[in-house]
Every structure is written in C-alpha cells, then in structure tokens.
Length: 333
Image 1: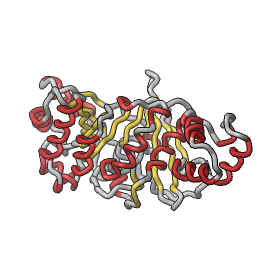
Image 2: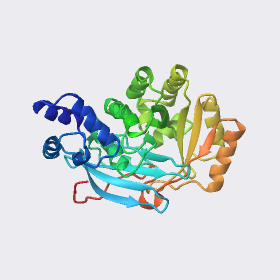
Image 3: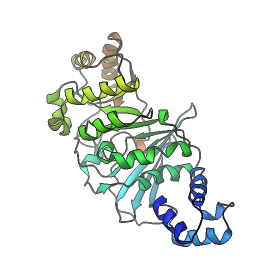
C-alpha cells in the first residue's frame, strides 16, 4: 500500500490525520481490503477502495514446495517482475526473503538474479507490500533482505520498509539486511542505523582474486574494505555479523580455503553460514562430504559455522535461484 497516496487521498477528503494510522494498523494485521476496516465509516471505505490500490504489486504466479516453502512472483505497476519467498520451519519460524530491486546490476556469476536484466530499485511501499501479501496468509516472524537485488544500493527504501516491519510482526532483531559489499550503502548503514537490524555479508571466497572472479563488485570494493565496515558495525552495536558462503564444487570448497577463511575472520565478530549451492547453470554444488570437511576446519578454528538448510529448491525458490524469468499475465492479488 502506498501510504503517501493514502495520506493525500484522506487529506483531500478532509479526513483527520489519524485515519492513515487506522488503515495501516488494519493492513499490518493482515486485512485483505478496506471493507474489513470496521472502525472506518462505510462511505470512506468505499471511497478508498475506488481511489487507493490496496497493494502496489500484482501477484502473477505462486509456487509451493514440498517442504512448505512458498514463492510468489509479483509485478510492479509498470510491469517489472520480482519474487518473494516464505520459508516455514518446524520451530514455528515463518521467515520472508524479501527483494529490494527488480533484477540486480551486480552480476554475481553464481546467482540467477544477476543473470537477468536489472530494471529498477523498488519503492518502500513495493518492498513492504511483499510482507503484507504474506501477512494476509498468516503470521510472519522473520525477514531477510536477501531476495532480488542489492539492498545497500536502495538503502533509504529498504530502511523505510524495515522500520515498519515491527507492526507486521517482525522485530529489528529478527530482520537481516544482506549485502555483497556495496560500500557506499554499507558505510551509511553502519554509521546511521541504530536499530539492532542484523547485517549479513555475502562473502563466498576467502581472497580477493577468487572473490573478484565470482563477484565483480569486489574489484571496486575489495575484501579488506568491506570487512573493516563489518567490524565497525560490531564495535558500534555489539552484534555479530553473519557471513554467507555458498559452496561451489572445486571452486571455493577446499579445506585449504576453509583454513584461509578461518584466518581471515575474527571468531568474536563473525558467524558463517555455509550454503549448499542450488545450481543455476554456472557451477555445481559441493558434495556433502566436502561441506562437512570445510565446516570441520572452521569448527577446529572455533569460528562459529552452520550449514544452512536448503528450502524450496524444487520450485527454484532457494538461495541464488530467484530469476522471475517467465512472462505471465498480470492479475490482481
């Protein structure tokens, strides 16, 4: 929901300012439309239904995995695609993987989103409407800005949306913003964001040469500069930084590289998530044995590390697979 359009519409009708808050509270609790907002006059509900689109996005397709993961394909008002994923876990967590851009301009070689055309940044309303769509389907508890796009390239909109997520049920400590190391946005995030929003860095290599091959952004913003900002975040906010490390067979999964990673990262600051690769055509995923051997090296170095559970691979909803390639007819949510 575009709250600016809502405010303008209400003001034009001479409605009191608190009406915006009332509408938002209903939307954040999962209301499916203005007609459900029973503390608004019926005439106002009808007028809003005609003048204000309830969502800035149209859902064009949805897929459900055998593990319970749900992936929704959306279209913006100007026809740009994006995908959002809901992951459910046995412990009750319902976590959203949210997109911040339609496509991505940074062309990481292992990521399907990086292989599609970049369209534009999403607005704060378009980001928030991804969460509201799934909130209408049930409670949500966590969010990671790890879908399509680089959040630090669209930081103002990402933060505006993130700061409204507590109303939807997602606290700052359960919100994570992931970056490949886009330094201008990362530096701003570290310096300006006082909320305990979590930071994750997509690392994927223990040295500059390999990382530059996998992630061209590293040529512009090398490892030392990116990690210095991560460590500054720890010093300022006393929160560990998550390291995302996708496991690519024969590329970055040798035990020697695990030892190099352990030397690179301070165990007091970082926690490593090893991610089994979900093939998109460029590479093969590491074997279970290779992942276990890699983790064993990190364990011996006492660098906290876990192997992430893969979700939604059968519907191309797992890490690195979001592409929104197929054109489908746009229909309202």
